[in-house]
Length: 191
Image 1 (cartoon, rainbow, N blue to C red):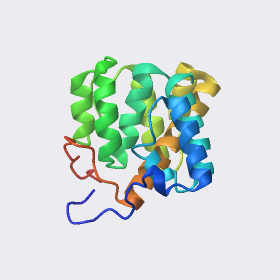
Image 2: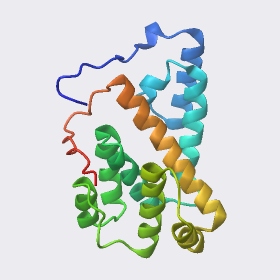
Image 3: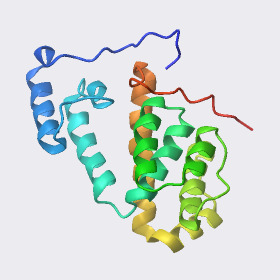
Image 4: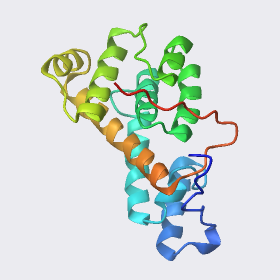
C-alpha cells in the first residue's frame, strides 16, 4: 500500500457482521482454524465469495498437484508481479521454510527472473508471468509445463494464478494495510 493512501475498507468486527457474514466467518474458522483475517477480512463483505474463495484456496494450498515449495514459489511470483506486499510477506517466509533458495526469493523480490531456477520452477515462472503480462501462454511454455505437470498441473497452476490474483486485486482495491513488519516491495521493473 502506498504510504499516502488510506485504506478504503477497514476490517469489520464480528459485531458488525450480517447473519450471512457471521455464517461465512464461522465456516472459515472451522475450515482454517483461525478467525477471518488478512484478505479474507475484505472478502467477508461478500459472504458467498468468501465461502467459495476459502474453499478453493484450501484446495490450492494443500491438496492440488502443484504443492509445497513449488506452490509457494508460484505464489511469490504472483505476489511479486502484483507488487502485493501482504501476500509477499506471508508467502516468502513460508517459501523459505519450505526450502526455496533464498537467492531465488531475493531475485524475485528485486523483480528479476531468478537465474538459479530448477526446471520445474522455470516452467512455473514462465507460464505464470506470460499469463499475467501477456495474457497468453506460448506453445513452448505450455509444452514445457505440460511435460513437468501434465494437464491437471497446468490447470492447477492457472487456478493458483487466478486465486492469488483475486486476493491481490482485492487487497489493492481496498488498499489493505501491510502486515506488521512487512518490508514493502520495490516497484516492479517494466521493460
